[in-house]
Length: 266
Image 1 (spheres, rainbow, N blue to C red):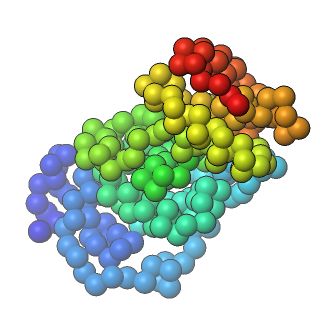
Image 2 (spheres, rainbow, N blue to C red):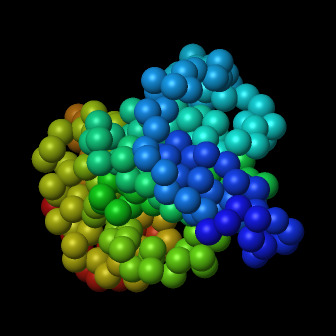
Image 3 (cartoon, rainbow, N blue to C red):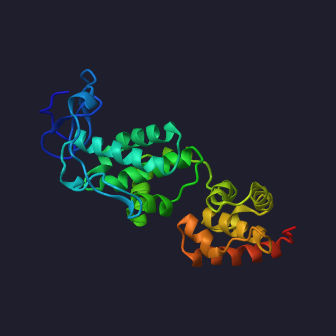
């Protein structure tokens, strides 16, 4: 396709060399040409990137300030790779997560226009984690990426609107799948994880509310109650990056549900 062809967004295409060797329109993302792949690391080098992720004292490091001032997609993608590597190290050691996150970033890049690169990369990571059934939620990803939760939700919804099939590939986000993640964060023995999962299996997921992580934490609180391994709601809130009130509300909900279905904790 000739770079002078009309861009669907308006005017002429703005061709730009992509990190993966493609020549794309900077405005709409359409691939204009596919030349031989370029060894970006060897030819482009470092861009002297800086910025921050995470809170000070906990994973605080330089990544990429001034992302919004970069217009060349190959530079933005270079930043995305650094962001994704930094984010995934806090979520999982599985290389498939970082590879899938980068794949999603490239696939839906036309939505990136006017978006914050950090938020967009974080949202792609959230989707990748959900696909691999790794415990993830907008609030957890927002905290580790130091971005706003509402923006992650907004970008997630836009990606799903652009590609409705993305939701079909996501396993149901159920509380029992979050239990071991929360238990490991709270240093609870495996015995309590198994007990919590067993009880949750007897409760219809439709009555446990929209917050699987909060329900998982609440169930662990209940099964550990009055035991030497007791963990407080405040401690569970801290390890799950949730508000203590959310955990408290989930505990009250579970007590009612357990009573309704006549399920005993023992």
